[in-house]
Length: 210
Image (tube, rainbow, N blue to C red; front, side, top):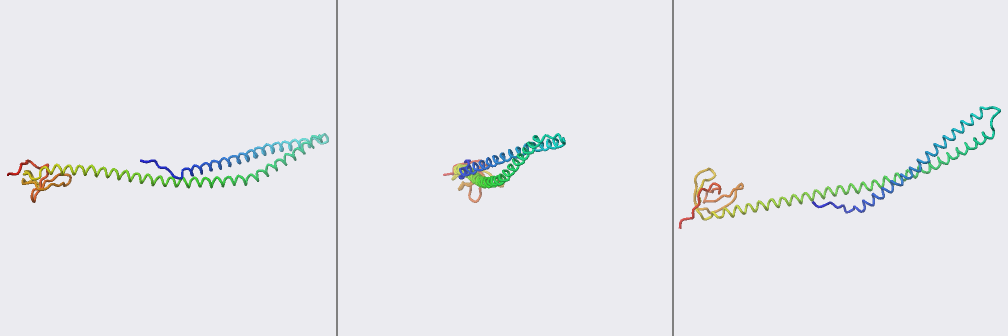
């Protein structure tokens, strides 16, 4: 059987390459967003630690270290600002993530459409090839049996003009000059006037009397 060749295979390869690129872009953007999430979590934990320290300093009463408290409050404000910047970056990045997702979906749909077309054409191709092979086998079978038939007729022709003795289909004795030959149900039949004898039932053959 011939091998199926999808004519749009170069286009399919191009579409798959595009899908891979879209997938990589989405992966990269999600990685950036994930790094921002991790960074914000670290900053938030650090800020929460400062708040705990400020509360502890505030509980010291008149012995509070003003400089230490002021420095911690200032740093906590900076961390809060950094967290706000991260939130803003993630908000802007969310739109980019959605764009990448939609682009990937469209690219994947284009790939699947071509793959579905290729599958349909391959199924039709295999069906046609199987039909051709079956037709070839059928023609070969017919040729073989036609040869067998011709061979049978040829062998039966050797009885023509000769006196045949044997039994008919009802197993009754019959004899006479063979004047025709034909096949019936796979058997070679010799015609003798209005009767006939199968070659298998011929018991004797003689040349006609001069």
